Every structure is written in C-alpha cells, then in structure tokens.
Length: 65
Image 1: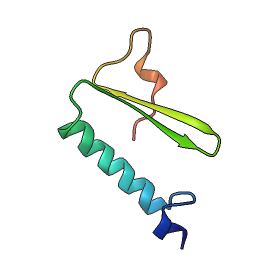
Image 2 (image 1 turned 180 degrees about the vertical axis):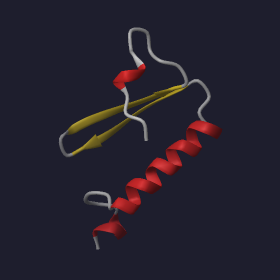
Image 3 (image 1 turned 90 degrees about the vertical axis):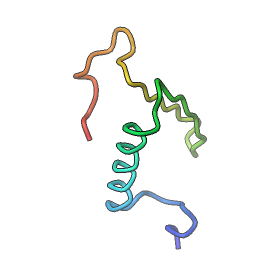
C-alpha cells in the first residue's frame, strides 16, 4: 500500500530507478544548474545539481553512483 501512495522508504529497485533517471536528466536536461527544495517530516531538504563544481569543493567530496 505504501508504494501506491508514494510513502515510506524506497525499495532497492526504486533507488536504482531514481539513479538511472538522475543520470538521464543530467545527460539530457540539466543545462547549467538546478536548485530544488522539498519538505520532509524532518524539515526542508535542499538539492543542488550543477555541471561544474562549486568554488572550494573537491571531487573527492562526492560519491559516484
């Protein structure tokens, strides 16, 4: 029932689908950057995607997926 409503943690298959969709989005739709915000039960979460590292950030700070 949780999957139908989109609630609860993601299944392993959903995590893989999310990663696959993010790769496609970054390859085909991301221009220079995207800044998103969503609410969670624990407060807001901010997402930032860019095709360049922010100043002062190192590639080693990121996990490949």
